[in-house]
Image (cartoon, rainbow, N blue to C red; front, top):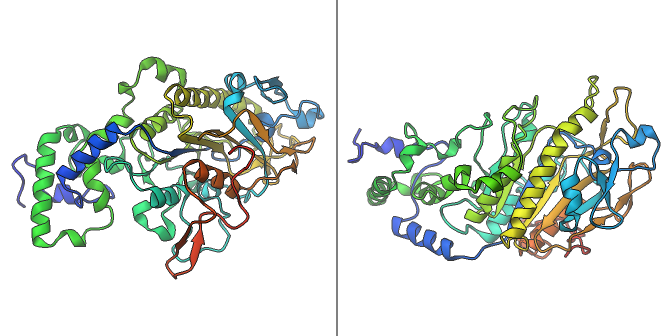
Length: 446
């Protein structure tokens, strides 16, 4: 097999994890990179998924006046917004609650242990168009496009979990694989991004950009001449820009971040939580770096929140996991404000359902899709408020029920996308909307 002068063979270029090469010239790539550097920002969304069903009463919807079997072991503390109380395990959030929105009345949780609803806004068992429903990131990728060829618009930091459905960032659905999440992590907490490794070529080799660019540009010219480029799969349109710059690799490299900023996110644990994800709190910082580099939608899974077995681990695990999330989420929101990104970058934090108000015989809480809570921030939203409320025992939304699709409609609105009036034809020619009719952005926050 013929090789280029730097010893890299054609086959090395053709086999790239789940990508191939080509579609964009070197000159176009470098020009786009320079233009992106000059850009002052873009709209983006960070979707933080808590696999397993976090206990809403022990986190962001405490019921301090309820009986002990409802109230639980954790105290409620005041925040810097009068009238809003949250769990004692979130003291940093409490001090900056004016920068958050609590949605305490999510009413339509599917009830399955699955990331699907948090990734798409839709119930998994709902009617599917041909090709399936796109994830939220796929819609944003399709509607807004890439900021720069060096960074996919729709990026994921979703670890492959023992419970497979907790690690799925969704798909491109009927919009196609070109808009599917570009997942950057695998089965190891600190594994190298699998999609960024050429066959037999390390990431360090990719840092030799000059020789790599020359080889790639020559490969593309020769492939175009031979008529081969048209036979490559859809990823050819992304790979050239990604592999011929260091932008994505740099965004993933926390050694390039101010150590003081990294430190305030707190310490990660590289240990996978049983069949869930590792609590890699540093990925919240990486999500911000990916957005700054050009990503429009970043999804990530954080730890494991299913603690209702016979081991009675609900409250011990709350004391372990919630402080990590408190530190990381507070640091992320602080970073966005300090960098002037708080009006451009929206954040949502949620799980697939809530937990039973009444504590079970194992001193834990069971599955409870009747009520759920989400946290939002940034995006130019009117923060410092709680939307909706559950009844006195946290059993059901009593005031202002909110749906998953209404949350997505809000995120789309903050990203400059009209979810209600934009329609895209699916594979059978039927017009589809980003959210079903009636699901409007939450008017209290926009």
